[in-house]
Amino acid sequence: MMQAFWILDSYKERKAHFSEHVNHILDQVAQDYCEEIAQLPKVNGSAREHQIMDSLLQFRFVQTEKLPAYSFRIIDNSDKSLKPKQSKSIIFTQILDCKNQTKKSIILSIRDDKIYFISSILGWIILSSLLIIIGIIALFINISFLRRQKKVSRIQSDFIGNMTHELKTPIATISVASEMLMKDKVLDDRTKSKRYSTIIFEENLRLKKLVERVMQIALFENGTMRLKLKETDLHQMIGNSSEAIKMLIEKRDGSITLEMKAKKFNYKVDTTHFSNIITNLLENAIKYSPDNLVIHLSTIDYSEGILIGIADQGMGIAKKHQERIFDRFYRVESGDVQNTQGFGLGLYYVRRVIEAHGGFIKVQSEEGKGSRFEIYIPQL
Ligand code: ADP
Image (cartoon, helix red, strand yellow):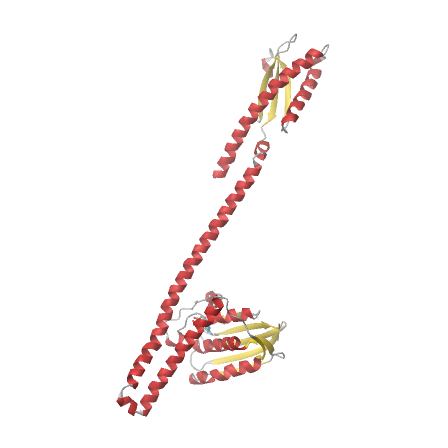
């Protein structure tokens, strides 16, 4: 809007300046004309006058600047009926008062060509448009930066809340269990003291896992994580991970099946991180499934690489959450059920590790039916 006003304003100013300039030229042309006419023995009718005037006009104008289309007439001053009425032109009149000649006037009509006037400020228009576009882009960048900052600070406060909540439970449990263990009555009872020791051991394990996960993420975040790639038998690694987790599955009356179809299964991976991600995905499959769970692990050769599938028949993930579950701290609210507690860091870590290996992770899931996570790792 502002720019439109500015263009209009510049156009008016430029036009006024132009009119002044043409009037000045016409003044000079009138003098030139009289001199030319005086030198000629006799001017032969209006065609000759016209010719002289045209060359004078062209000479003067070409000397100064390029003109939009123009036309002119030379009239007798007595002839009032010949006043031009061209609304789309700018009309200039100059009296030609030459010695020994009847008084005449030249009526010069120059097309009111907006484009011509505006073209002279085109550079400024482009520059100002560019500046406005840059300004708008900068504004958008600023807004999105602020929004991102706001999101990050919300995520951070969510994380602190979540973390405090997660830490409080095992700390409180350990404190109660150790307090009980200190009692002589409990110490004398082997079953009770074993139960409390187990609680302390398991809760401590939970704390350790939590700290490890936060540390793994921190390594990625500050860019100090380096992969130690080593030729690894992925079938063996997947077998080991599933074996290690079997107890947890059996505790929930579940089962796990393996279908290792990949013909090439030796890949250069970071064994620690890679086995972490398989464990993370298996733990999620257990965590987000009801009892009697069924987990299916598979591998297949796929596009110069390997595709590892981890499928469960658990609670599934609604479509709207599927893309975001790989984001940092993203969790699907599922009520405060004990076994679905977490930080929303697991899948983020998984994605980061897989991407660091040049691969990708995808999920196919249906609410209430189950999920299938697919990891692709290319041959390096
Ligand atoms: P966390 O499990 O700590 O919440 P994750 O990053 O591992 O964090 O997972 C993010 C979210 O994705 C979880 O909150 C959960 O809602 C969903 N999710 C992950 N794995 C599964 C699964 N196998 N079945 C259903 N939902 C899952």
